[in-house]
Amino acid sequence: MDVQCTLYDLRCTLSSVSSDTREPLGRQAIVARAIAIADERGVDALSMRILARELGYEVMSLYNHIRNKDEVLSAMVDAVAAEVPTASVADDPLTAARTLAMETRAALVRHPWAASLWLTQWPGPARVGHMEQLLATFSETDMPPDVAHLAFHAVNNHVIGYTLQEQAMAYEAGDAGDEIARRFLDGIAAEEFPHTAAHVRQHLAGETGSSFEVVLDLILDGLARMHRADSSAVGTDR
Amino acid sequence: MDVQCTLYDLRCTLSSVSSDTREPLGRQAIVARAIAIADERGVDALSMRILARELGYEVMSLYNHIRNKDEVLSAMVDAVAAEVPTASVADDPLTAARTLAMETRAALVRHPWAASLWLTQWPGPARVGHMEQLLATFSETDMPPDVAHLAFHAVNNHVIGYTLQEQAMAYEAGDAGDEIARRFLDGIAAEEFPHTAAHVRQHLAGETGSSFEVVLDLILDGLARMHRADSSAVGTDR
DNA sequence: ACCTGAACACCGTTCAAGT
DNA sequence: ACCTGAACACCGTTCAAGT
Image 1 (cartoon, rainbow over the protein chains, first blue to last red):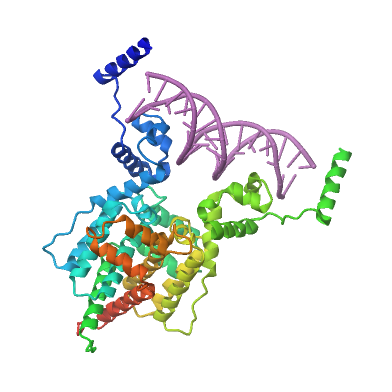
Image 2 (image 1 turned 90 degrees about the vertical axis):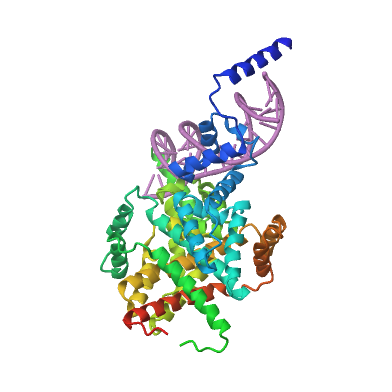
């Protein structure tokens, strides 16, 4: 027993002196590595076993620091939510909402796996903070509460829905996102589906740049108009 | 060899006469059963092994009729797309687009697993038909092509984004969708996140019924206004 | 032509044992 | 306190053998 202790201590000493290249395991290190893997190779390539190997540990060691894989995924999205900068207080509420939407989208584009997890994973603190912020900006407008409620969902849906849709399009293609559109075009009978063929061709021609912003503005303008119509009570709308 | 053939034939005869309760295997039967399982227990509960067992076959038999699981999933969404009734030709284009959006949403609500597959799975014939139809209705308006292109994405994003978002909310709760909202409310500090707490309370109070339609109309109105502004060239907009 | 047993290379997670 | 070997109950898919 004396011997055992000595050997153990020796090993600890040795490893602390040098030789042990791996960083200490912990929730933060795990999540950071998971994000790196998902960024590089997609969420599908993220397994607990691979995650552990890349960290230099065995699979089971992870469970000393996190409850299960779901907790890792939750923490990953929350990290993305934390990347979204808080909107400037100086701006008027609606443009603050606009830039918040743009920044959220930017974060989701930086981490293409995040949009779908955003929907399915239980919201962590950063996500709740993000909600709070968007809701706060709408409450600073003079929208009535029910319109503000609506505004939150409309903007949120657009940000996530648009990004998901876009990423689904580019999913299988490598950097050349066109590849997939071209393959799709080849697959359908252009004479039977003329509008679809034309639509895809518009995409290939790149005539579809900033539609995220255009639709976002359309929604925000619609909301502004809505509450203006509301507050002017009797409609001298036109 | 003679004996073998006889035995085999005998078994075939017997089974065709009675005894063999299971229906013949085929692409259609497989997809139908897969949809039934996903409807009842969710997509996560759908494995090839379970699917085969419920059909009365071994797993590997499935691969005589379909290439892989992905093909099954693709066929499942396409079946949902096929459920969406074609819009009446009598309506004016924008209301036709509106009812098409509503019907699509209804189909996605009937099959809660379908919305996320809609985004990730390669579109089959019914999905292409669905695209074609929505694009066709917008092209029948007098929108310029670029606005029609935008309209397609805006409406599509809303339908899928809204439904996904909504289902994410109700995901873990059983029939009582409130359960999850209440749990969320308990989890956050109401004084730190007042707007978020208020928002969730609005949901619990049920003050949030038809927001899908309201936002849809907001988008469609915005689009109509947009092309009206476009076509009247010089803006006598107000 | 269609069904299937055995096998392969994976999963996430638990539990008891190690230091 | 933290790490880990062995094991459990799953996956999707292939291949060669059966009738």
